Length: 158
Image 1 (cartoon, one colour):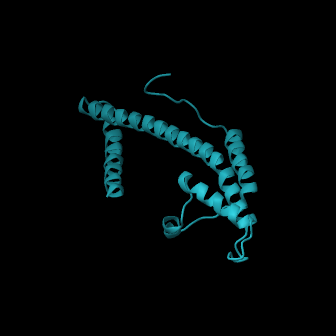
Image 2 (cartoon, rainbow, N blue to C red; image 1 turned 135 degrees about the vertical axis):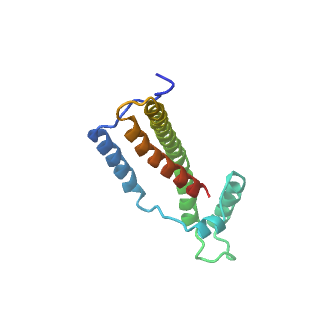
Image 3 (tube, rainbow, N blue to C red; image 1 turned 90 degrees about the horizontal axis):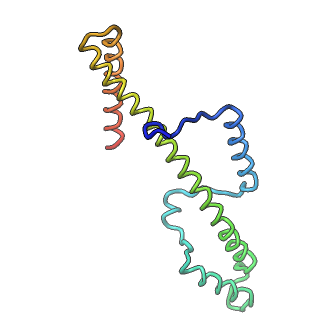
């Protein structure tokens, strides 16, 4: 493995299709998943390891069906919610790990190709000064693209 080329791979059509089919297969039993608005995500009360015991204790109280608890609050639904929360946890950890690896891999290969582009630009600049055939036009093309990419990056960062 070369430090300048850590990854040398292209997915073939069958691999891309297998990945996409796998994602579709994964989504089927998860048809109940929902999206939150940013406001909901911010304002919903959240369970964590510290208050999970509190939630479990409240379910135990609900199971006793005390008269002071409205019938709309049921232990069955609360227990189902808690169980689904627990079931999703290891799945989310695996998917987050996979997504992080995919993003890191994409960053590596993107960096590799961008390093090559910077080298070609630098070589075209040096070659046009000699002058060498084709270097001037290559440098002009890359100079325009390079300037546009720098301006786009600056606008995106602001």
